[in-house]
Length: 358
Image (cartoon, rainbow, N blue to C red; front, side):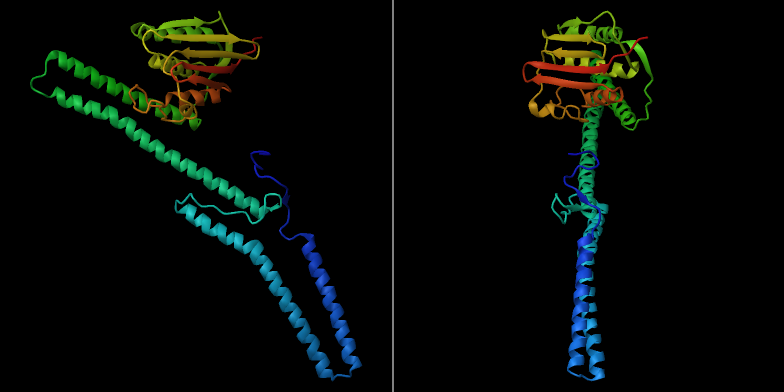
């Protein structure tokens, strides 16, 4: 692609009626004028009557006018009316919700005119609208699915709690299950709202210079009980200090999501490693685990909303965490890369611009 604006190839014609067309008109009129002069000379030489000499040129120029009019009409119809009629029909279908519409360009890619460009841009727009519609449908479907599960859990355990022969131990167990499902539902709604605000730029990042090493240590310690419970070994290779210019609260979402996923998908006895490196241009943070890893197919979608590589949904989560991470890093001019292999774990690497301290 040449650019986002001109993603098509070839030079675009500035006019639908090139100078050569006007040259044809001029040549035809000169030729017709010559024939007219020849007729006049011939009729004078043959001493035709004045009426005949008047009617024949009139009839002749009438034929010329009809011919030029039909040629011009055909040219206008082919150049303007046919493309615009197809555009009108296509826009009507799109307005009715049909995003499978496609209009072929009238010329090859190496000799486009601006109507061809308009058609190509229209096709691109419809393709994008179709993608948005698909995403919207998937989003609604996934939200419904993710909400339905904890709601069903809450309802089932609430019904069990109403039983007459429920022991205190069972009551406690059911209550904990209801609380867990309610927390999951609450987290889902919170993440949806956060992602919506981030995507619509309703959150204005409060950027400041701060020590990311300190923040990383604090976030790691928040998961201490969890990794100890699963007997996971936590290794940290973090410098004494490294400064970045970013929104501290939003970056905390990034570290918490990456660490949470690492703990969640690492089996008991596994290892999680957090590495941080700093140079004058950027700060790099990587979170590695020895968990189940991610398939090549899933790697292409892990930053999509509601996508879960674990299609069984046996692991807790709603598929929004990495979408949030991606959006936050975009706002912070950062980047995230992932390397993973099934059965051998994953490594997520975040790169952020380093702050220039005066």
